[in-house]
Image (cartoon, rainbow, N blue to C red; front, side, top):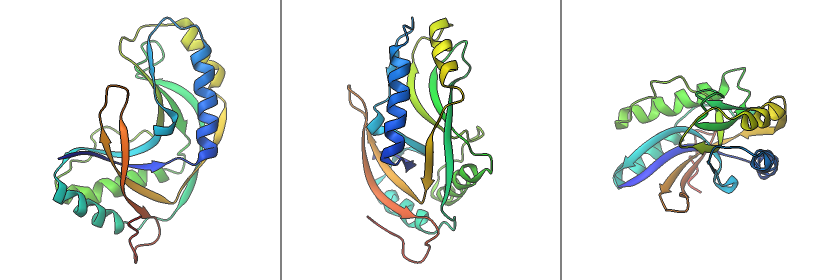
Length: 194
């Protein structure tokens, strides 16, 4: 069994901008303990699959190759916190999915994995990149102020031209992600295993 998820990779120039934003937040003298995401590991998850049997992995790859979704781009801007800034658990950077293209892509991914036994998400898809997590959330004025300073910032563009199936291995010093397969969008005839 492997722990797997389907996600979009980020271009390097976007990673650089997100690293700068994370560094600004790290400099804020906050009173909560934040476990920061490694920027090299940052990706946009479309569906978390959980533990998957090896034979099913190949079937997921085949299913992803059949999605008829065209490539697109979305601006990446603004920061916030889930569930809210008063008791933040997850610090995120937003993807400006006004046209709903990321939501459509996530729905397409979930539609092709459902026949393989994966339940679609019940929660509405919220396109975001996780910068950090807080185990014990509580109000923190310094953190709220730091988030506010980045609210209107634009970090770049996320060009979405492929989806990837990843394996996630949990380690004490953070997860290790391994790409299992890649699938170009808008190219249903020759499914790319790269």
